[in-house]
Amino acid sequence: MEEKNTTHILYGNIVYAVSPEKLVFSEGAYLVCENGKCRGVYDSREDALRTLSAQPEKVPVTDFGDRLIVPGLVDLHLHAPQYAYRGLGMDLELVEWLNTVTFPEEAKYGEITYAAQAYDDFVTDMKQTATTRMCVFGTVHPEATLLLARKLSEAGFGAYVGKVNMDRNAPDSLCEESATASFTATMDYLRKFAFLHSQGRISERVQPIITPRFIPSCTPELMEDLGELATQQNLKVQSHLSESKKEIEWVSELEPDAAFYGDCYAKAGMMGNPVTSVMAHCVWSSPEEIRMIKEGGVFVAHCPQSNTNLASGIAPIRCYLKEGLHLGLGTDIAGGFSRSIFRAMADAIQVSKLYYRLVDQDQKPLTLSEAFYMGTLGGGAFFGKVGTFLDGYDLDAVVLDDSGLDSVFDMDLAKRLERIVYMPESAALCAKYVQGERIL
Ligand code: GUN
Ligand code: FE
Image (cartoon, rainbow, N blue to C red; front, side):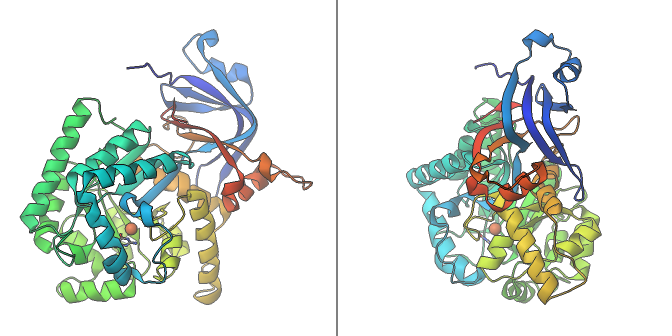
């Protein structure tokens, strides 16, 4: 295998978040990477080189000139098999959209040639985005989902990739036969995943994740088995929670003994301690559910575009920030049609303004800094030390050329970042690194 150089220095205009409130801007600076880890940002080349144990003449410095270097973006929630029909069916709400558009399409991934073509298209297009890490849903099919994991690995992404579990309320073409059949298919997926890891055919940056679709799709029996598995094998969990009102009503009919929606996950041991989970949406979480999310250290994947498209509602993200919840952003392809996490930042800010104006004037709109934080360090924390350029973090970075946005208007680095967030299509992606390895 070709040896990858992960000790090097990048020069450019460097921007990163260190907290929701604080962005750091370093114009014309040197970002040091040693064995894939950040070793700080320096104003002078000499200071940058001094931090490394390697001989200075052996350390390559890549000069990105006036371009921006920002942490790779993190998509904390999306569905790869929905990519092929993004932007369609958007006149429907969640439950109708799942039944009429999503489930019939996902059933096709039992056919491996269809899955191969679709996942090629997905990965090829995702390479051209600023996203470096993702938590992604496949389908119920182990083989197709393994193929997705391999393709993401080949492209250099960091990812959690889940084989979906569904043993009720789905068409026969998609529904797994029983809780046992669903659980067995997940075990098969995990075994084959481990084998591909051992062969070096999937990199360690790509990992499996337990993926019960949502409570209406999974019986309590299946949930219990999956929760035990996650606990025993130290696996993370991804799912959906309190996305739409109709869905929540459906859950209360299906599981009348649960105190609230999140309680169904808690009963299966999927709301923290020791399992780490990410729940998409949390648009309509009750105070008890929010407390459970907080106490369990559960990550919330905020998907503002999807919540708008499916008319689900507006998640109270200002409240969640005040509560100190772990927050990241998701495109939720294909509830969302855009694959851009910059776009998700802009959407998050926009919907927070509507929430402030129309719902609760005590909940101030999100700032650019808060949105940028969620799309980098906030979501990155799910992957470990990921999402910023502080010492010891994985060096995931993207290099952006925003010269297409040049105008007579005089712009500092903060303004340039702001424009990229709102108009990402006007900034060209020049390079992409994950753990110090150049992947584009
Ligand atoms: N809830 C259960 N499945 C899905 C899905 O595929 N997309 C969204 N947005 N919500 C879901
Ligand atoms: Fe989703």
